[in-house]
Amino acid sequence: MTDLPTTAQEAARFQRLNRSLLTFYAGTSLLAFFVLPILVRFGSAQWLWLLLPLTLIANGYWATLHEAIHGQLLVGAEKNRRAGRALAILWGSSFRLLRFGHLMHHRFNRHKLDRPDSYDPATTSALVARLRFFAEALGGLYVIEVLTPLLYLMPQRRVAALVRSLYSGDEAPMPRLRPLAEQALAGPKGIAEIRQDALIAAALIGAALIAWGPYWPAFAGFLLGRGLLVSFLDNVYHFRTPLDQVDYAYNLSLPGPLQRLFLNMNMHRVHHRRMHLPWWQLPQQFTQEHEQFDAPLLHAALRQFTGPAAVAPPPQA
Image 1: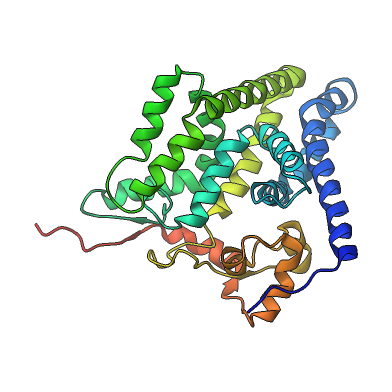
Image 2 (image 1 turned 120 degrees about the horizontal axis):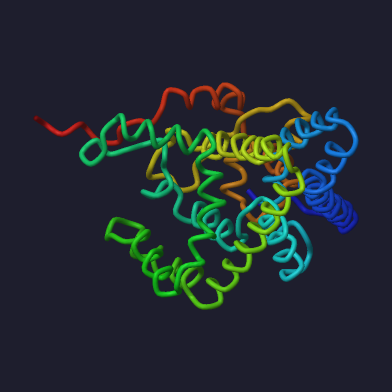
């Protein structure tokens, strides 16, 4: 199958829409950080209710950042990188870290650091695996994304050693993945950029907490709430999928408004096979390739409560 042709007019229309999405999500984050606390503290506590819809659009925020990770949000590599970096900082993290992790997820899907839904009972107990899986799915992934850049404030040699340790071992694809990680995440340029992002993100969150004053728990709830929504659905498209099929993922159906909020990322198998396609071309490709939905996204999300699966027989006593 070949990709469907795109007219210049159609591409220009969606590029304008992408710029609007960037403005909207960056603007709503700044609204939650610095405008709402003024309205709440010096106006009415009723403004606190606005945090609820700002939390519930978290998956749309992530989908927009995801487009920047794939170089598809804005035309021009540098403009796209700056946009992605701004969204990542307002998310509380670093674009370089998020981009590397996600692109390696595409290239080496289901490697040992990319399958939280499975475990080897020879090395990990079922209890530990379940605790780790649910901790990550119920917001822990977001906490990791926020805290990891702060580790880059350590001396450079310690950061480089940490990266090498994380990607150590001879199990495939670690020998191929390790030099890529060292180049992207442990070199002077990468460390400097991630440090800058960590300091800016921490300063913004710190300033927002001060701005919210006695209402700071509401802002903390906003951060953790949007982190929970994204963390819970991060692995839903790969939950218990085959470990040896790099391009495999589920297509999961959503009602029209939610599919648009998710920027069609629920067509995830199509996205993995055609990751160079922008979000707005995925439905056309879905139709052209005669794809089908495997299940509703809600059903797949709830199925995650069955927990991780063992990938090998338990060791003999």
